[in-house]
Length: 196
Image (cartoon, rainbow, N blue to C red; front, side):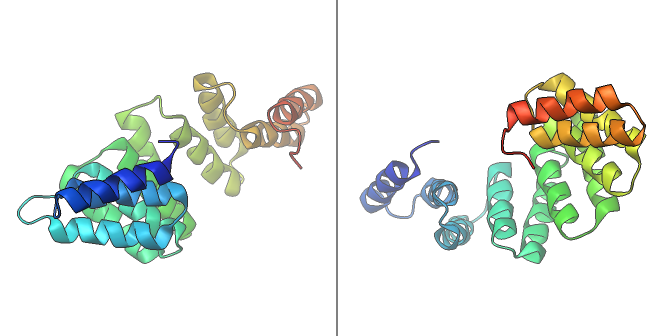
């Protein structure tokens, strides 16, 4: 979006001109979330749900409403919203990816891994799913598996995340592959000179 405050002004005008329009609170929720106003984002998503009478919300509602609750730290509500979205819309990769992230933040790593694997089954080109699978494998010290996932991620986007290269460097170092470790760490620093 880029200019959420401008978008909010336009949305408020639209709501004043034609009150009760269903799309306005959904769009306002997304704009508030982008502007960093979680309270108003959550309030707007709630208003959107209240304005819907006989139709089910689209996937974008479930994604952003769950994201707002997750960012706000209410993981149980975030999980409830994303689970409902998956029930209504099925295996949509963005919903699965967020469901995995919510599960991971809740410490439910096996469930998170299942969601991330579903994402890669649906669309193998989603970099975040491969990276997140790598992170889960890395946490359980399955370094070979983690490295495979990280390599898939950087094969899709060579500039994706300095932390991927840092972890690949750590894995290579543990395998006593010093030159490879140095190459990965150098790339991590290239992407993010402040990487510690």
